[in-house]
Structures are given as C-alpha cells and as structure tokens.
Length: 414
Image 1 (cartoon, rainbow, N blue to C red):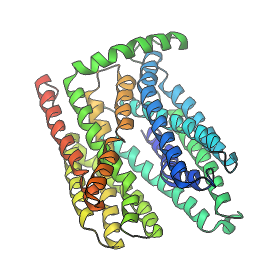
Image 2 (tube, rainbow, N blue to C red; image 1 turned 90 degrees about the vertical axis):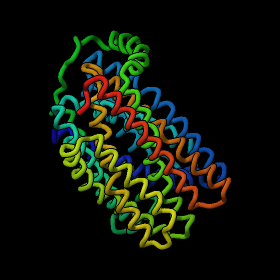
Image 3 (cartoon, one colour; image 1 turned 180 degrees about the vertical axis):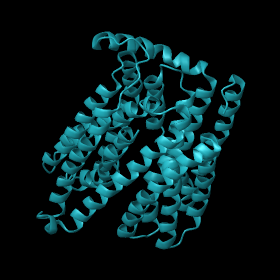
C-alpha cells in the first residue's frame, strides 16, 4: 500500500514544478523569446489542446491492453521512464527552439498521464474495497506533500540561483527539469519493485495483448453504457472535476486580474499544496466514516462556497484564505472520486475502465475555462466569470445523485 502510494509522491513533482509552475513561463519567455505574446500564447494553447486530446484518446487503449496482458506494473515502469527522460531532456533545449520543447513536453505528459492510468488501476490490487477511500487518500496526500516539497526547493533555486551554483534563474529552471526527472524515477521504484498485481485474466503476449485490447476497447463503449451507475458517475465526474480543474488553472490568472502581486500568488500556490496533504488524509478517513459519495458531496458544497467567496475577495489575505479552502478539498474530491469509481468497476476491467475515467478527466479541462472566458467577454466582469464555475459543481452534484439512484437499483449501493 505504501509503495503504491509513493508513486503519487513521485509523479506529482511533474504536475507541480513542470505543468503548473515552470514550463508555461519558460515556454513563453525562453523558448519563444522574441516572439510576440499572442503568437506564443497560441502555440502554448495549441500544444496543450493537442496534447490533451492525444493523451485522452490513448488512455483507454493503454488500459485495455494492460488488462489483457496483466502488465500494469511493467507498463507503469515503461511510461515512467518515458516521462522522466523527456522531462530531464527539457534542460537541453536551447533558447528559441519551441518545437523541440513542445515535443518533449508532450512525451513527458504522455508518460505522466499514462502512469496515472496504470497507478490508478493498481488501487484495486493493493487494497480491499473497504480500504479504497483511505488508501486513495494516502496516495493523494503523499502526492501533494512530495510535489510541494520539490516545488518549494525549485522555486527557492530560481530566487537564489547563486546559492546553488547557478549563474541565473534560467539555469536554475533548466536544472529543475532534471531534478523532477530524477525525483520521479527514484520514488517510482518502490511501486514498480514491490507492488504485485492480481492477475484477473490469462496473460498473453504483447502483440496479442494489443489485438485483444483494441477489440475490447471497441466493446467498452457499449459496456460502460450498460453499467448505469458507472455511466452516470462518469458524467457527473466530467462536470465537477472540470470545475475543480478550472479553479486550479484560473486562480492565479484571476488573482492577477484583481491586481495581486505574483509573489503573493506563488505563496498561495505553495500553501494550497501543503494544506492539501493533511486534508487528503482526512478525507480518506472521512470516506470510511460517511462513505465516498457523501464525502464527494461535501467537497462539492465547499467548492460552491469557494466560488461564491472568490467573487467578494478584496485583498491578498482573502486570496490566502481562498488557497487554504481549495487545499482542504482539492485532494479529497480527487481521492474519493478515484476510490468511489473503483467500487463501481466490474471485476477484471480495472485498467480499461480507469482508462475511460482518466480520459474523462483529461477532456474535463475545456468546458470550465470556456465558460469563464465567455462570461468575462459578455459581462466584462472578472468576478462574474469566476462565479460561473458554480454551474459545473451544481450540475455535477445533480448527476451524482442519479448515479446513486442507479446504484440502488442494481443493489450495489453502499
């Protein structure tokens, strides 16, 4: 269990330092140096959109193949090596070479999200059903702690580069990409070496696994539709996790639009990471006490309050309070969603169904930002734009009720 959870500690370094932190800034200011801002923004947007589409489409394919070959751990190691190597390789990309940087970033992202698919599916192999909430919470908690710790070090490296032997902040950022690759690989080893998957189907060769996996994939769309609780939950998850992702992605932009300083926003981002660590553990415990579904509902209520509070904030102090509130539920809603979905997955379909689960999560990064953008354009009010996210939490909660009703009808409600 601990070895499995440490994979979240390992790969969260990529999510914090690279995805959320340095890559967007370095891509615009270093690899697109001398390019007008609108063009570099277009390139970054195109990169993120294309990368998300590729990853989302590959997720269920990878899951189906892993189910047929009983090779979840082996494939987890393969995508981890890909992600680590591509991340470290970013340090070698010269100024102005944005295509090379974009290509490596897409490969690293494929390694990251592929690892998420296989690691999520292994939850069912390291824990019993009554342990899913707690064990999933451990994983997210360690992820927030590990990712936050390395991110804090990397930020300090850029603020005091000479202290670490670097000439400037740019050199410190490049070194940070290497530290992420090494961190990710080293702390992934416990999971790869210790975790043993439970074989649920006869193991076959790689080529046959591909053929069988792709055949299964075609039928999975039909299968998901036949499992009503799964179908309703995935629809609910798509909406409310889009709201969660939008809060994560738009919070800093919202703070800047209100005139808060970058230093305050960076501190708030770190604060969210470290609050999320004990909060994810607490939500794992809470899920065991009141059930994962009720825990998700509680988190949705808090998120609804967060979006309403965001409308009224006036100072950096208010933004810190907002960061704490987000940290309290961000890891909780993610971990309980993973464990709740694990209970709904039919036996022998863990990787395949978790592939679809992660696919929904990847695609759930478009609707919210679009909603915010359209609201801002129509109203010319940043505060109303952030408030519009409330629609996603309400709609997601409504569909979650329908998932619970479908579960009752099938006699699997708990």
